[in-house]
Structures are given as C-alpha cells and as structure tokens.
Image (tube, rainbow, N blue to C red):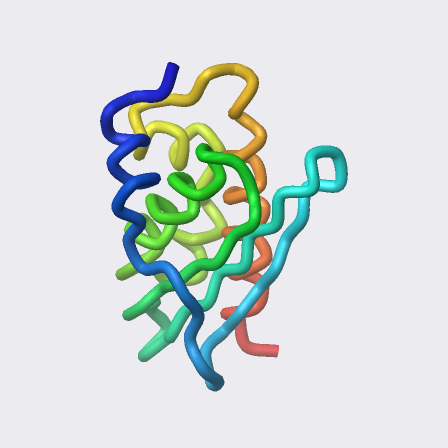
Length: 120
C-alpha cells in the first residue's frame, strides 16, 4: 500500500517536464521493468537551482521522480552524489517491497547527474 505522501506526489507531481540546454540532463533505465527516468537540472554557482523530471513507469516511479526533484534543489554535486535510494524512499514515507526499484532508479539518476555536474 502506498503512503499518502507518495500518492500526493503521484496525483500532483512537482516539477514534471524538462529544461532546455544548458541544463544538465541524464537518463536512466531499469532493464528489468522498463521504467525510464530523465532528470534535468539548471546549475548556478555549483548548485541546482531548478530540477525537472520525465518518466515512463509505474505509480512509484512517477511519485519518486517528483520527490527527487525536490531533494535535488539546492544541492551541489557532492550532495547529489550522496543521495541513496533509502533517502529518496524516505521522502515519500516509504515504498512497498515491489516498488523499491523506483528509488533505486532515482538514486542511479542522482549519481549520473552528480557526475554530469562536475567539471571535466
């Protein structure tokens, strides 16, 4: 059963959509269930000032994408890299076992975003 907080993110997703370049954008996919999560962020002075997401997936993936954008806003690359699936899951007051893959996918997106944010 989904928490009221998760259902709120699902029914009223925050920050859905994408950002135009020069936004930093990453895309990750779960090869088992086929869920896809794309996260775009606008970075100023090393911190995310705006984040958006697009997803194709289950209820949990939609809600987790929404929650992830809220967690990302204000973070620098090291803070983004430190986000774990458990942190993201906690932002929606937990997930049923069969939906935990959504938080893992979001953590993968955060890691990819952190790498993309770092100067080369």
